[in-house]
Amino acid sequence: DHVHGEPLPRRADVGGLSPALPPGGEREARRRVTAYWRSGLDDYERTHDDLAGDATSRLSAHLHFGTLSPVELVHRARRRGGPGADAFVRQLAWRDFHRQVLAARPAAAHADYRTRHDHWRPERAARADIAAWREGRTGYPVVDAAMRQLRHEGWMHNRARLLTASFLTKTLYVDWRVGAAHFLHWLVDGDISNNQLNWQWTAGTGTDSRPNRVLNPVTQGRRYDPDGAYVRRWVPELADVDGRRVHEPWKLPGPERAALDYPDPVVGLSEGLARFRRARGRPH
Image (cartoon, rainbow, N blue to C red):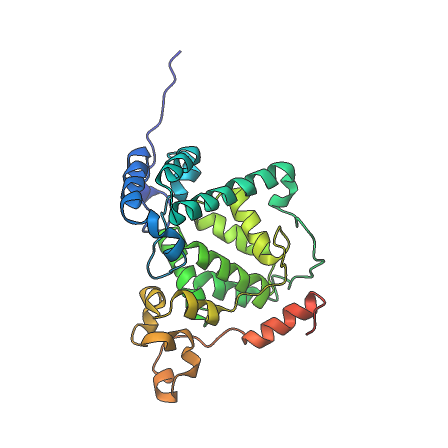
């Protein structure tokens, strides 16, 4: 008997995809490795958190789909040597670490690795905040920029993943599983081990030794997007706000603020922090 195949679906026939997904395949993976080794790897340690610089390798999707081997990358990086290569290998080690944790504790894909006895806000009560976070209209520019990039490209910078996850779980006090499911829906590199355990790390229910750390989105924006170029790239409503002022549009002079078609913050940072600390039994 013959096995009859069916034609692969065309991209245009598949709904719910990001419009700017990267090309796939081994040939593209090797092209990207060659380009990154030539112009990005040596500076990786210094530049990998630069949101606007987009200085990471963007090899995660190829690692996820198997068009590139992490073992090969480690060998090549070690042959290259230097601080950039060493930092790059450390990130690959984090990837394997999460796989090992999930292999030992499979339930961590959907249950707290280390419970903090959280009583997350009910999804019905937090529905408007969750929608604002998903759609990139929280009123916090760096959060909104990252969430819009996710929908458009199916990818997000690792620093942006951390700060958006912290905002959802700690500033909005929404269950990490809500955010993890949204990321898995959109991320072209999304896999269970890295996605779920990174979310747990940020929510404080995973392997982080500082489970109650909170990433302030204004501070994170100023530090990792100091000129606001990343925000202006993804939040066109703020394209005419210059420099660092773009990270706090609510502080703009009245007429300038009124002219912006951009929402006010869904919650004050001090209010969100106080709610989180009360929930975790840390009132001060």
